[in-house]
Amino acid sequence: MFLLHCPHCGELRDEQEFGYAGEAFIARPAQPEAVDDALWGDYLFMRQNPKGWLWEQWQHTAACRKVFVVKRHTASYEVAGSWTLAEGKALWLTEKTRATARDMDPRMNPQGATA
Image (tube, rainbow, N blue to C red; front, side):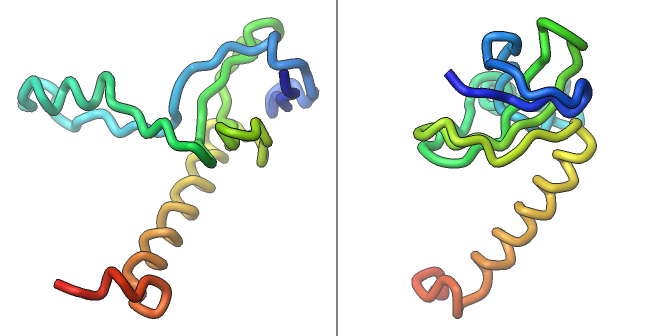
C-alpha cells in the first residue's frame, strides 16, 4: 500500500480511499467515426504499461470524488506528485516536449542519428 495526496482535499490518505482510473492523457481520435477498427481498438485497449514512471488518473472515491493526476513509478510505487487535471497536463506536456527535444538531439542520442 502507499499514500496519495489529493490536490483537491489537500490531504495525504491511504490508497484504499482512491480508485484507479487508468493511464492519463490518452489522446482520443479527433474524428472517431472516421477511424478504422484497428485504430479505434488501439485507442480503447492499448496502454503503455511501462516498468517505470507513468502518469495516471485517480479518483478520491472516499471523499471529494474528484479525479486528479499522479506520477507514479510502477515498479517501486514511489509517487513523484499529484496534481489537478489541468496542472498535471501542463507538467506532462512540458515533460513530453523535453523528452522529444532530447531524443532529437544527436549529442544526447548518438545512435538515433542515422536515416
